[in-house]
Image (tube, rainbow, N blue to C red; front, top):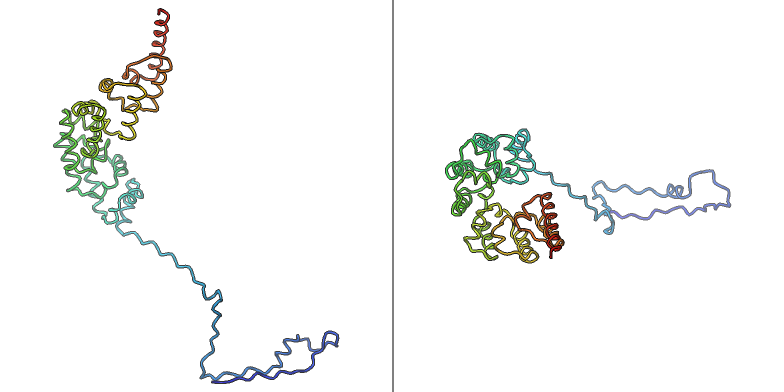
Length: 331
């Protein structure tokens, strides 16, 4: 190891500002450094001296931010599928977001699905809307999922193949349901209620075929029975107006029943005669018309009050008011 001695510096008198300025223009500090002895050269065999920054230096704690991880490239087949769907007019972004199975699908399988549905009479413009509403159809199994549905339409509902598109267009969810576990049980239930024109029923109310009997239909039958109807009366209630099964118990049946029996002081017999009451808007039709009748002190049958158009309702109210005033005059 080498040892170094502090070099001797000149202690010569340096004139102050009052003394005459030296001719050498070099600043004082630079002159002192220049007069110092040079630092001896280190032995080339010795290890270099490394000056580490102090621990408290901000340089020690500085870390570069992590580089963002690149997003994975979509699968080659998925790229082709997206391009194909876009060219066909589908909303590929929506389909990919709502159908994760598309990531593992092949372009050939997508071709087969579309060609199969078109072979069943579904037009291309309708196919775009159908897939947009039910994206899972695009990755369904033709043998296990789609063929049983079309067999159900043909054999159970007796719908001609040329009319398949009419039913599917009105309710695309038919293609996304199990024929064995959902469609057939629903049809059997409505046949038990007395539905005989199966094609007419399927054309008018195809959405009822996708309802789960145990989870959707029976709870509404139970609610109607809680109002005082027998099971036979409740099911006949539904038979007369099957569209009621598409309504929510909490958002439709309960508030309308409470208003009918509470504010309107209605009877169960009135409700039996006019089950369409539950299909009318509570805030838009039932409440305003009932309150108008109450304010003017007149009464009107439930069906007449709700079935009439606005103009007809106004004329009926005017006639009833005139009759009521005439009756009061004679009294």
